[in-house]
Length: 334
Image 1 (tube, helix red, strand yellow):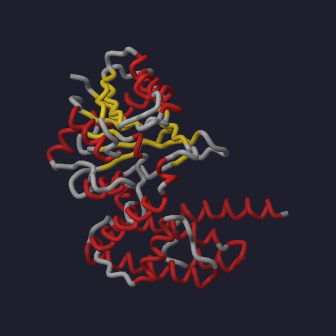
Image 2: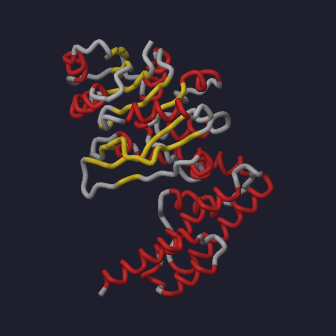
Image 3: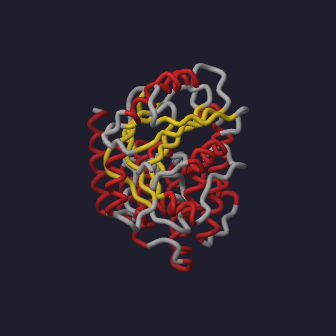
C-alpha cells in the first residue's frame, strides 16, 4: 500500500505528458503510485506511458472520452494510498512537492487538503501565484474563486470518502472550485507557502478553449456561496461580484463607491450568519479593496489614495503595499 496515490487524467496530452510524468517519477518521496486515466486518447499518450516501464505507473483506459470529472473519480476510486495527490498532464511538480505535502499532513491531522504556491511556465512573463495559506483565509477567498492550484493539491483519502466528497460528473469545468466549496462544509484547508508546482500556460489548455463554460460554473458556485453567507443580491450587485472575482474592477470614484458598498454589505451579512471568521473576511475584502483603488490610481490620483485610507476596509499591511505600488507607478511615469 503506497503512502500517496497520484491521480492524473489525460486526453490527447502527448505534447507535455512525458515531462509531467517524469516530474512525478523523480519525486524525493518514493512511496507512491501514479494512476493515469487515459480518457479515450487518440494520440501517442498511451504509448508514451507504456514506454516508461515503471511498476509505479498504473494505466486505466476509458474506451470513450468520459471527461475530466468522471476520469478523476475513476482514478480516485482505484487509489489505495492514505493520501491522494492531483497532477495534470501538462504541469510539472518540483522534486520536493509530495514529500513536503505528506510531511505537512502528517504533522497537521486537523487539515484534510493541502495545496502550494505555483509558478507559471510556457508563457512570458512568468507569474508566481502566492495564495492564502490559512484555512480561514482560503474559505473566505472561495467567495470569489478557488485559491488552490488544482493540479497541486493533496488530500486525505479517508476524509473525502467518509464525507462522500467526489467530483460532480455533471460539472466539466471549474470542477475543483465546485468540489472545494462543498468540501469546506466538512474539512479544513491549507496552502504551503512554497512554489512546488510549475503550472503550464498554453493555447491548447481546455480552460482557455472553454472559457465561457468555466465562467458559467464559477458564477453558479459564487451565487451558492453568497446565499450561504445570507446575501440576497440584486442583478447589479451580482454582476459586480462576478467582475471582481475576475479582477475586473469598475472605473472612477463611482466604481469605488459600488465596491465599498458591496463589501460592507458582505461584512454586515457575515455579522448575522457568522459563516466566516470576521478578521479573515475583512482581510479577503481588504485585498480586493486595495486592487480596486490601484485600478483607478492613474485616473483619480490622490483621490484614490484618500478613498483607500479613509475606508474601514483598508489595513496597515495593505496600506504599505499600496504605498509601494503607488511610488513605483509614479517613478515609472517620470
